[in-house]
Amino acid sequence: MSSINVSDAEFENEVLKADGPVMVDFWAEWCGPCKALSPIVDEVANELSGKVKVVKINIDENPDAPTKYGVRGIPTLMVFNGGELKETKVGGMSKTQLNEWLDTAVS
Image 1 (tube, helix red, strand yellow):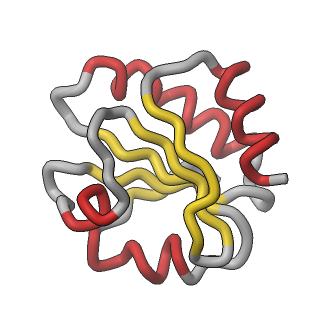
Image 2 (cartoon, helix red, strand yellow; image 1 turned 180 degrees about the horizontal axis):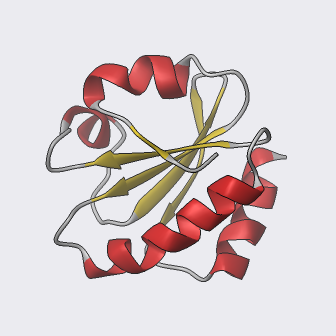
Image 3 (cartoon, one colour; image 1 turned 120 degrees about the horizontal axis):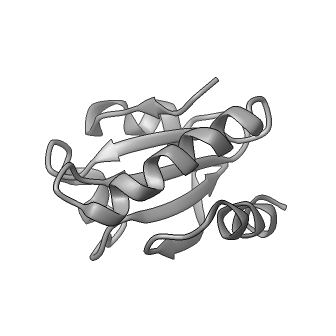
């Protein structure tokens, strides 16, 4: 299963009320590093299917969640578990870096 696009309206159900860890990718259409990171996020979503849910939220179309969680730069990745924010990482990264960060974030 690849990543899921969510809106502000769906954020609570898809992220905060989800069973198990959820990684949220905050991005925008105009963001170069976001576009570079997007296929890596999709790959990781496929590989971790059943272990970590991966969702993407476009900050231009959905300003509430990024504002609530203090997103200042993008791409910003956040891991939530049990409705709580556990880890945040800002900026682009390699697949290896993303996997290593996720390993520690969800353990």
